[in-house]
Amino acid sequence: MKMKIAGRLLLCLSLTGGLASVAGAEDRLGPLTPWLARPGAEVIREDFSPGEISDRWHFTEWWTTSDGVLLRNELPGENKRLFWKKPAYRDSAISFSFSFRGAEEIRLMSGASGKYNFVILLRRDHFRVNTAGDSTVPHLPSIQGECSFRFEPEKWYRLQVEVLGEEILARIDDEHFVVGRHPIIDRERSYFAFQVDEPSAAFDRVRLSKGAAVDGWAERRAQLEKAQAGRVVVPRTLAERHKDRKVIARDRAWRVDPRYRELVGNHERLREEARNRFPAAYLSAKAAKKKVAAKRKELLKNEPAYKKLAHSINKARRGEILYLEKKHPRLSSLPATQYKAELQRLRVRARAADPAFNQLLESRTILEKRLGSSYPQLSLTNEEVAAKRKAAIKELNESSTTFRESSRKISLAWRELGNHLLESDPELAQLDKELQAEKKKRRDK
Image 1 (cartoon, rainbow, N blue to C red):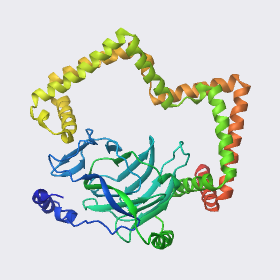
Image 2 (image 1 turned 180 degrees about the horizontal axis):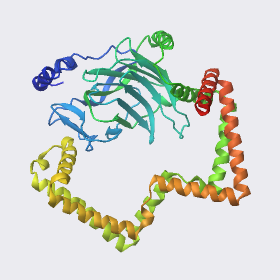
Image 3 (image 1 turned 90 degrees about the horizontal axis):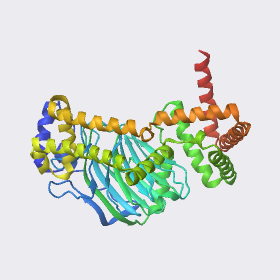
Image 4 (image 1 turned 60 degrees about the vertical axis):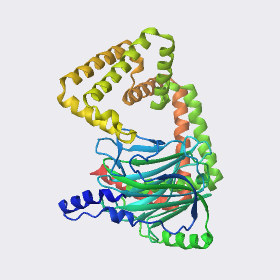
């Protein structure tokens, strides 16, 4: 971290009674010796120095930079991301410095072919390596492992991630690590992002490099896997342990158990047949909103009245921004890394105390209400989709023996799939037994 902010941080330290995190402390977080993949050609090298920040970061209002540090700022919002535009990496070495501040969860997210790939999840009491489901391969989600670690909210830490082929290693230091292996990891990646659950968190010194193999990994991996298997598990509720074990069991069964894949295929075939025959009963929010988006596109192309109204709304939005830029000339001079966050802060303040700005908002609201009343089919919430789906199921259950028989077959296939999974994973079976007993106990109270 940059020396120019040391004074400010030391002042904060004195005012807060000794919270750990000064500039020098973050500076001393050097790279760990590579165990799996050593860094080569750099893809991302970012220190967030003013005037030198890459324009390939996609900044939104919830992210900004200050004094040479990347910040998930104070503006409210859940699970907000900042991503690097179109990276290309496979075998790789990744590292970055971070401080939780007010956040509870930080994620490093990667992706390939429009799907998520590996995800490093950092929480206040542990960190974990997951892989995502990917229907294009296909693979189911997996949990590769986790490690207990007590992250202090104001302290800086550095995470190092090494990826080679199907293998991954995430480390805070030589004692705190997660090692994993999964076929989905061996892919060309095109997505790199940070996600923070809530305000606020800080990041610095981001590195993403192409990776090359390190000698001696096979022997070291055996030692790490043994140590990881012998760890005391992170404390969890019974329901959480059951959920995690089910993810692990489903992933393993999908990869090694032909009978499980057969049962999954049968269940999916029955569901696909039902979706095609009874689409209203299987309408998802995603599919419904996709239809709405297509309808908007069609109206913009073919309906002059809609096009004129939509244009007026966009013009009103631009007018609000121009008003704030004129009233606060410094806004236009801010770099892209700070502009959207500061614009949102000014919007919030203007809504609270600026009658002229509120008049602009009211004018836009009138236009939006007119659009909603003229084209109600374009206003669709998740709750409305769920209500439509529920009503369709009710009607079909009352009127269609074919639908009832289809639902019965799907339920039987799902039950057979679940029973097979329990039979193939004794740990899951035991947790399931305990969970059912706990639920029964609550119902009997």
